[in-house]
Length: 280
Image 1 (cartoon, rainbow, N blue to C red):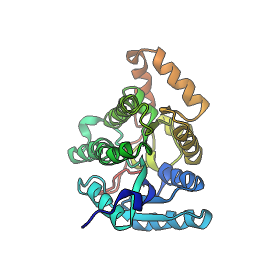
Image 2: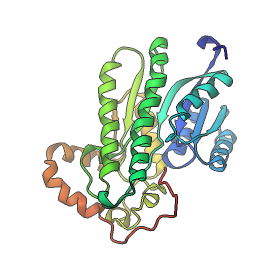
Image 3: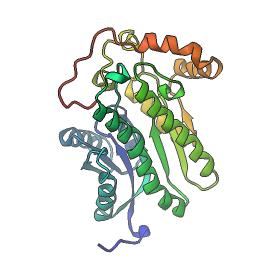
Image 4: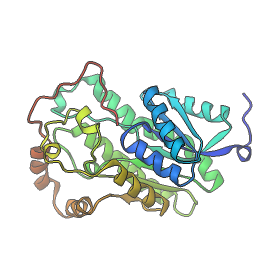
């Protein structure tokens, strides 16, 4: 296949996990900004529903691609799809991810591998895949979706918190490397967000969920989008979460971990369906 010159292709914002939750809310924000979209997720029906809803409200192109980013071949599948559709990646939103709640030693080994593959490896692969072209153009950017959980260790969600710590660290390091290039990079690190994500990861009975804490996906996405467009590196939506982030910088983790364990420990053993992956 002969590659078309990039100047002959049209820009597109790629959003992984864009069919539900924060990813879908971010898709609406980028569409409102006038950006054409490519939504990537595993569920074709949810993708089509999201695409129709966005297209009905905004005059933008919304393409969809069914793909599981745990499969390493999916990143090259996205590149091939862009070429076939005569587009290039202007902005990349790494939103797809999933979590595991409960004792680390009791997690299925394959589930832990999948978590690391999706939250860490796939995000890294896609960033490395599209960043060189952005640098060549001197424009574009990457918005990673992490969590406030990435700011400290999280007993009973240990692998999930650790994966989000990687995302925050990578983003901060790349923001230094990209300074002055015209390419922006940000990480959205919300506290609890009222989506299906926490229930799917097995945290239905955790105290932080039972307390009713959290903000809407729309609010998190709106602040994430505006912060990204303003060039802010670390975006923490919500006043309470921002105050919490300040406290996390001051208080030692050894003091905080007992409190985190209390909030994150399941009160009722979660019941996940066979083969269910806790995707946002």
